[in-house]
Image (tube, rainbow, N blue to C red; front, side, top):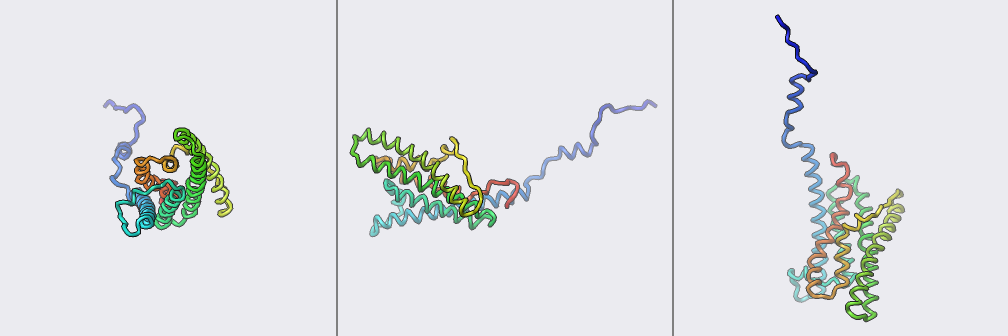
Length: 243
């Protein structure tokens, strides 16, 4: 009989089928990680929203003690830098609290460090510089067009200087507190995500009623970013692990 030979080096049939078998739907470990991270995100946002709501309620109660209306919570005027910083700080702390309570204890230090960066580098220093510059320009009683141009230039410069110097100062504070290196490299992409600083700039420099009405609604939502960044710090590291 003639012997048939199979040409080529082929893997066993079982191995071929094994490699081509579809993966089981739903990886329990991966689902567990996703659910865990979603829980932290939800708790962080809930903390930020709750803190922001309490601050806005306090503002409305102060402005209208005898005629408090929930419908007025998003009609606040944020022309005052202190109000802006207060809203941003409280919202950020709410997000931090939500993240600390829901995430693993090993990530608490990273969240506190991020909160310090958010407060100093993204809230305190930029808003203080912009607020001081705009106030100084307004006191000069320039023509409106010139005032807008100067305020815009001063505000943009204030945001840039504030982000750089603020984050540098925050890094030094973290190094003192935690005895470890904390240098944040800032590039063009870092400035592109500072939507809250842009909204703050508009809030402090605009006198238009319609613009201020928009800011009253937008700024509380934008500042949720500060709380989210603090509360979810380190959440995206090691995507295959919960801790």
